[in-house]
Length: 243
Image (cartoon, rainbow, N blue to C red):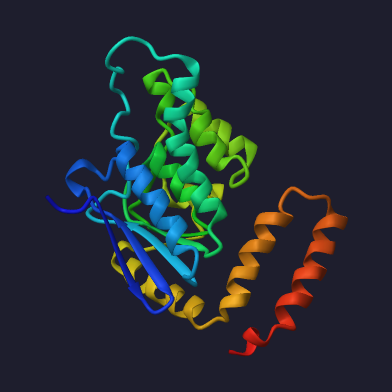
């Protein structure tokens, strides 16, 4: 049986690929734990993590979406432990010192749209589509919403949640889920160009940029500027900036 997640490395760039194309790259809890560990490990010394998926779909959600739980109802604390599998995955994307570049070639639904939003940069094909379908399954989607709450506007988040509409790549671009949309035939070359540019930049500056954005977001302006002054001086005075 093929590995459900593939990983390769080229210099400072680590590529992690969901590899369950026959099931639209729907993610099991075991895959979520594996992906969490891979992001956490790669983030320790990579300059960039490229996150993508095999086949025509990016990720159409969790493997259990729409399925009734087996056995008797679980207690709240037990359910929280189960849900933490996904929340821990979200945290890995947020907390990785290395930025994550998402490559979205097709449908990104549920967990897939959450991971799209959590990537630091997202390049999408013009054939990609996006959806928060949880309400269709009688699930309040606060798990997905927690991933997107600081990534897109409140109105966009409410629209996606309540309407459950499938939106196209250009709408995703307008909502802030994607940073760049290119023709499907040009997706790989656009990603290669982005990877080449980031790979050429100093490691300390690449990591410092993510650190600043992660820590300055949500602060009042005075504290955000104070943080910028501190990390700007530290990074640009480092001997590693010239390596």
